[in-house]
Length: 182
Image 1 (cartoon, rainbow, N blue to C red):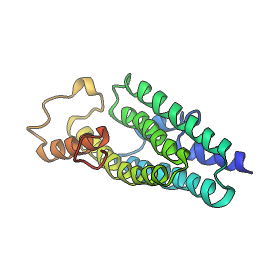
Image 2 (cartoon, one colour):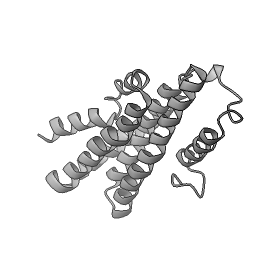
Image 3 (cartoon, rainbow, N blue to C red):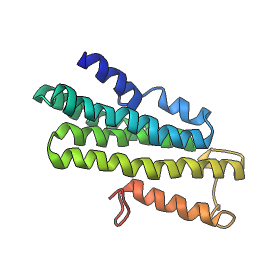
Image 4 (cartoon, rainbow, N blue to C red):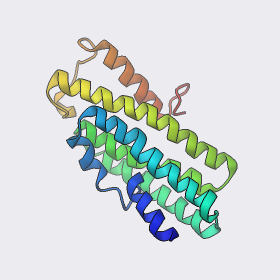
């Protein structure tokens, strides 16, 4: 039961190797749906449910915690490597979500109170700033007619509010102090 439930919710959370649906889902969805998909579906229904299953239903055994650590580390690495080669703004954000979910799962896999708290705290933070980035990607796409990063530039002048909110969310997602991702 644990293996089946963990596999199902790992698919929902887009943990490697169950992540392949996410980069295709975000570009095909409108920006508000991408924001909700990133903030609610992946994190709340995927990662939080895995946390509840591991710590409240089955118990955090050493083998299960090791599995979570490995899945988290692999998701962190593969997600960011795949994000480096993306020029579509929403696909880039989707692959980065795979990487960030890895951080959350790794925190849970530590099995310590601070690790669990850190993973769940990052779940909340990531839901907020990634949703903002997806909403901003929709505003940019509507203004420019493209999501291709190679065709963008100089948008701070015509879109100052979007520029500042994107900068704020980008600093947060990068872990720059004093933003919430730090």
